[in-house]
Image 1 (tube, one colour):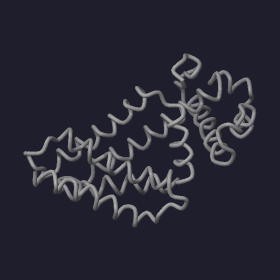
Image 2 (image 1 turned 120 degrees about the vertical axis):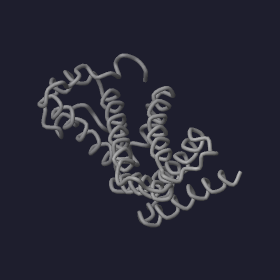
Image 3 (image 1 turned 180 degrees about the vertical axis):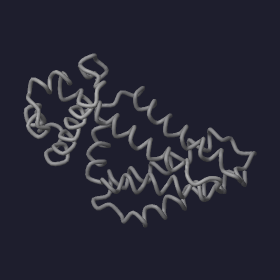
Amino acid sequence: MSTPTVKPRRKPLQSRAWMTSGAIQDAFVMLLVERGYDKVSMREIAAVAGVGLGTLYLYFPGKESIAAVTVRSWMRKQAAVLAAAARTPAPRTLQATVQALAAAHVQALLGQAGEWRALLELERRISPPERYREIYREFVLLFRDALGAATDWPAALDLQRTAFNGFTILHGLAKQALLVQETCPPADELLADVTLAVGAYFRAAEAG
């Protein structure tokens, strides 16, 4: 999937182009949830997006390109959700920071559970390892900066290591709730489990 054909033909620079690209991605996600990746065609995407087939190919050379751009776009949006949660309110304790980050991540994923389930399954199929590592590092950096800004961050802890492990616990529990369980648990139940698991890890790490 790292071939040039996966890249979009046109980078949307103007507002109208952004709207068109967004409509195409929205149509793709809708069809992905309803029909599954293998059954979705470029013609169907164009019809749902309200664009001509020629216009669709002007933006994307194929379905693989739409899939790659859409997955990356949704991941960027999720990173922005975490970034917003990390900024407000401040100052705050480590426990409050973890609760804010966990709540933002879990609620965003479960708020569009069907879409995220389909996209996370697709991500495992289309994302090359280097691209997956790149976006994962971005999430870890957001987590690290938020933890490091906590008023009671334990100075003895390795911030990078702890942030990686903490985010992996958070994301792993939330992701597998979507991918493995037939019915997603209620958001408050999953959030309680995630917060408990991450908090327990931090306490154990601090205890040495």
